[in-house]
Image 1: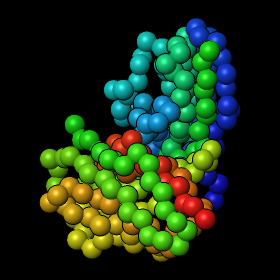
Image 2: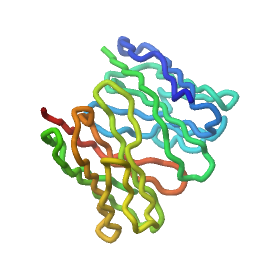
Image 3: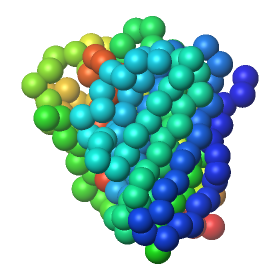
Image 4: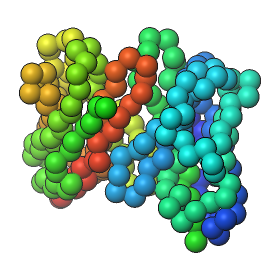
Length: 115
Length: 113
């Protein structure tokens, strides 16, 4: 079974530029998550989708971050404009979404460096 | 809000020996789930072990086992017969109903030959 796929793996941009990350979850997984992991810290949830609807985006900085999951499969996370403090690894995870306490499976992440 | 605390930023262990990583959490819920995830250097995070709070029996997965003390809100991970491939960042995480994971800050484990 294929795991969670993410691209690109690495991205370097200048501050105030925009950037987008892509995630393809495990086939059949209804729930998709985006996390931000700043160096030396644990991942922090940015947004959670159930199919193509948003369940929780309370920690998403909506003035600059946006995310969508059209058709309930792939998802993109966008940052516009980027700030220096956005430098982090952005992790995508997915789960079956069946029980409400499902194990999450993580992708390899996208390492973003903002200069 | 739930919090997860990992008090050991770094630990090291000799190959073949046993090491225990500590984790405490804070919640007012009675039913929840606890996880240990492993994140090797430059590699993706993988699940090590999962514990349901309603189960009194401690979870085990091969060389990995937990000591779950619900009253003390403690959830430690024991790695037996440590191997070089166990070198990684280990995260303790908490989940209640709704699938939201809250992570600790992590413990870097180095296994030495």
